Image (cartoon, rainbow, N blue to C red; front, side, top):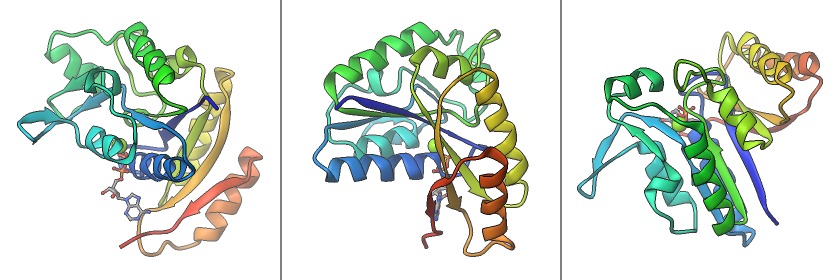
Amino acid sequence: MKQAFFITGTDTGVGKTYIACKLIRDYVAQGYKVVGMKPVSAGTVLADSDWVNEDVLQLEKAGNVIVSRELINPYSFTAPIAPHIAAKNEGIKIKIELIQQAFEALVTMADIVIVEGAGGFLVPLNNQQTTADLVAALNIPIILVVGMKLGCINHALLTVEAIKARQLTLHGWVANQLAPSMDAFEENIATITQKIHMNCLAIYPYKR
Ligand SMILES: Nc1ncnc2c1ncn2[C@@H]1O[C@H](COP(=O)(O)OP(=O)(O)O)[C@@H](O)[C@H]1O
Ligand SMILES: [Mg+2]
């Protein structure tokens, strides 16, 4: 089996990495060769004498295929700011073709590639292109992580509209519980389900 998914979210900090890692571990447990990819990251920490993005570390840990960091994370910027600004500050232009080449290489090495976007769906990558253009180039189905908090209905509907406007494939959406409790949690899920005409693939409870 060769399969890939693009994990996008209603915002940054909504659980894309958390769910990407869970998905990766689930597939690993089923016996597949699985690798996570974070094409563009902004913000690094020092780990084993290398400056690396924390999401990249987590994705690497979850997967079971050893590949070079250049393939998993072709663009890594130091500052934890919007990627196209971080890139500009470092004198680099993010090229979707380069990401595509890295992705194709990963596809040859693994059964399943889970790609995590930076931030939300329309995050710019350079002056002309956004994350949506990257998804179009990779041509893989999207899983939308909805971070369950006040405002998430609007964010979910906006994201789905942006996906549909580009004729990209929404595989499904998941609800990620970001806090121990949320008022009208079930009603929020019901509303999103009804408005986007798509059942929730999974509800991930808040984990202490
Ligand atoms: N279901 C959950 N239960 C508890 N903590 C969560 C859950 N989902 C995400 N988190 C925490 O919320 C923070 C943001 O999640 P993360 O996956 O890094 O978001 P994103 O990748 O969208 O920026 C992290 O500290 C993560 O561990
Ligand atoms: Mg992340």
